[in-house]
Length: 81
Length: 146
Image (tube, rainbow over all chains, first blue to last red; front, side):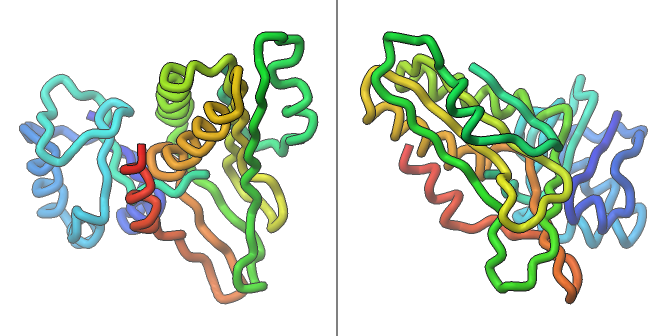
């Protein structure tokens, strides 16, 4: 699946997007898998209360299943307007 | 309904003049323009990042809700991204309805939701460096009004 990052999440991980091969069942499982990879992921995902997630470009939550999802986006709370 | 997400500047006055023009069934037009504010006197640039695939659709969903809830005759949302200088317009909202209460309320609702539910992130660049603007608890609380 395609995983995309914005704002400081992108900066901390050092990539705007990547393709991830995963069997993670939920967003939380995917976060655990990425965090175990490298310190920069663990640092970005250290406090998920400071993060938001979108699945296929719709806001979602960390317990949501990833079945059939093509794009997961992680970012801080939005500051539009 | 018009939703535009663009890097280019826009002319808020011209947009407002063109908005809902020729409609004889409306009695009220309300608009809001958001401007890059230099709070500490040292802002060089405001960088606005967005989520291209999601932004227009997320704004349209919010605008659809406003149209349905306040029976708006028309709604306009323009939001910029990219590097902006202090004093430049960032975004504007305009609402048109039969009576003013609906137009005012809907514009207020749109602003509250655009602030916290449209995928934009602001970064302030000063001589000291660059930092991301944190979302405020008050912005999230504002959504509960609706």
